[in-house]
Image (cartoon, rainbow, N blue to C red; front, top):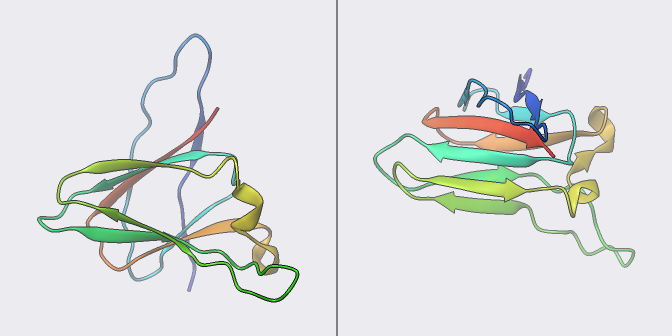
Length: 114
Protein backbone atom coordinates (compact mmCIF):
# COMPACT_ATOMS: atom_id res chain seq x y z
CA UNK A 1 0.00 0.00 0.00
CA UNK A 2 1.49 3.33 -1.07
CA UNK A 3 0.34 5.99 1.38
CA UNK A 4 -0.78 9.37 0.00
CA UNK A 5 1.40 12.37 0.86
CA UNK A 6 -0.06 15.33 2.72
CA UNK A 7 2.25 18.17 1.56
CA UNK A 8 3.54 20.61 4.18
CA UNK A 9 3.27 24.35 3.56
CA UNK A 10 5.66 26.67 5.39
CA UNK A 11 3.89 29.63 6.95
CA UNK A 12 5.81 32.86 6.37
CA UNK A 13 5.88 35.84 8.69
CA UNK A 14 4.49 38.02 5.90
CA UNK A 15 1.62 35.60 5.23
CA UNK A 16 1.05 32.49 3.18
CA UNK A 17 -1.89 31.61 0.94
CA UNK A 18 -3.94 28.63 2.05
CA UNK A 19 -2.76 25.56 0.12
CA UNK A 20 -4.98 23.13 -1.73
CA UNK A 21 -6.39 20.36 0.42
CA UNK A 22 -5.37 16.72 0.11
CA UNK A 23 -8.47 14.54 -0.27
CA UNK A 24 -8.97 11.60 2.06
CA UNK A 25 -7.70 8.23 0.82
CA UNK A 26 -9.11 5.45 3.00
CA UNK A 27 -7.73 2.73 0.72
CA UNK A 28 -4.10 3.82 1.17
CA UNK A 29 -4.09 6.17 4.18
CA UNK A 30 -1.66 9.11 4.36
CA UNK A 31 1.76 10.25 5.50
CA UNK A 32 3.66 13.41 6.38
CA UNK A 33 7.41 13.78 5.84
CA UNK A 34 7.90 15.80 9.02
CA UNK A 35 6.33 15.77 12.47
CA UNK A 36 7.00 19.44 13.23
CA UNK A 37 3.66 20.54 11.82
CA UNK A 38 0.09 21.52 12.52
CA UNK A 39 -2.37 19.39 10.56
CA UNK A 40 -5.79 20.73 9.58
CA UNK A 41 -8.30 17.86 9.52
CA UNK A 42 -11.63 18.68 7.85
CA UNK A 43 -14.43 16.13 7.98
CA UNK A 44 -16.58 16.57 4.86
CA UNK A 45 -19.08 13.83 5.77
CA UNK A 46 -22.49 14.00 7.42
CA UNK A 47 -21.33 12.16 10.55
CA UNK A 48 -18.43 12.19 13.01
CA UNK A 49 -15.18 10.53 11.89
CA UNK A 50 -11.83 9.65 13.48
CA UNK A 51 -8.39 10.45 12.13
CA UNK A 52 -5.49 8.52 13.68
CA UNK A 53 -1.89 9.67 14.01
CA UNK A 54 -0.06 6.37 14.47
CA UNK A 55 2.39 6.13 17.38
CA UNK A 56 4.96 3.32 17.02
CA UNK A 57 6.82 3.96 20.26
CA UNK A 58 6.85 2.39 23.71
CA UNK A 59 8.17 3.58 27.04
CA UNK A 60 11.57 2.30 28.21
CA UNK A 61 9.60 -0.25 30.25
CA UNK A 62 7.87 -1.59 27.13
CA UNK A 63 4.45 0.02 27.54
CA UNK A 64 3.13 0.93 24.10
CA UNK A 65 2.08 4.53 23.57
CA UNK A 66 -1.50 4.82 22.34
CA UNK A 67 -2.19 6.21 18.89
CA UNK A 68 -3.53 9.77 18.82
CA UNK A 69 -7.15 9.36 17.68
CA UNK A 70 -8.96 12.65 17.02
CA UNK A 71 -12.72 12.67 16.59
CA UNK A 72 -14.00 15.35 14.23
CA UNK A 73 -17.71 16.12 14.02
CA UNK A 74 -19.72 16.28 10.80
CA UNK A 75 -18.56 19.17 8.61
CA UNK A 76 -16.11 20.33 11.31
CA UNK A 77 -12.40 21.14 11.29
CA UNK A 78 -9.84 20.34 13.98
CA UNK A 79 -6.17 21.25 14.11
CA UNK A 80 -3.61 18.74 15.39
CA UNK A 81 -0.31 20.15 16.66
CA UNK A 82 2.30 17.41 16.29
CA UNK A 83 5.26 19.73 16.83
CA UNK A 84 5.69 19.32 20.60
CA UNK A 85 5.61 15.51 20.60
CA UNK A 86 6.46 14.83 16.97
CA UNK A 87 9.24 12.36 17.71
CA UNK A 88 6.65 9.92 19.04
CA UNK A 89 4.90 9.79 15.67
CA UNK A 90 7.82 9.09 13.33
CA UNK A 91 8.03 5.62 11.81
CA UNK A 92 11.67 4.52 11.89
CA UNK A 93 10.76 1.65 9.57
CA UNK A 94 9.47 4.10 6.92
CA UNK A 95 12.02 6.92 6.53
CA UNK A 96 10.73 8.59 9.73
CA UNK A 97 7.43 9.52 8.14
CA UNK A 98 4.31 10.24 10.18
CA UNK A 99 1.45 7.89 9.37
CA UNK A 100 -2.10 9.23 9.25
CA UNK A 101 -4.87 6.61 9.09
CA UNK A 102 -8.49 7.20 8.06
CA UNK A 103 -11.49 4.93 7.45
CA UNK A 104 -13.34 7.24 5.05
CA UNK A 105 -12.56 9.31 1.96
CA UNK A 106 -14.60 12.17 3.46
CA UNK A 107 -11.58 14.18 4.59
CA UNK A 108 -9.57 17.20 3.51
CA UNK A 109 -6.09 17.68 4.98
CA UNK A 110 -3.63 20.55 5.01
CA UNK A 111 -0.35 20.64 6.93
CA UNK A 112 1.58 23.70 8.03
CA UNK A 113 5.15 24.12 9.23
CA UNK A 114 5.64 27.10 11.55
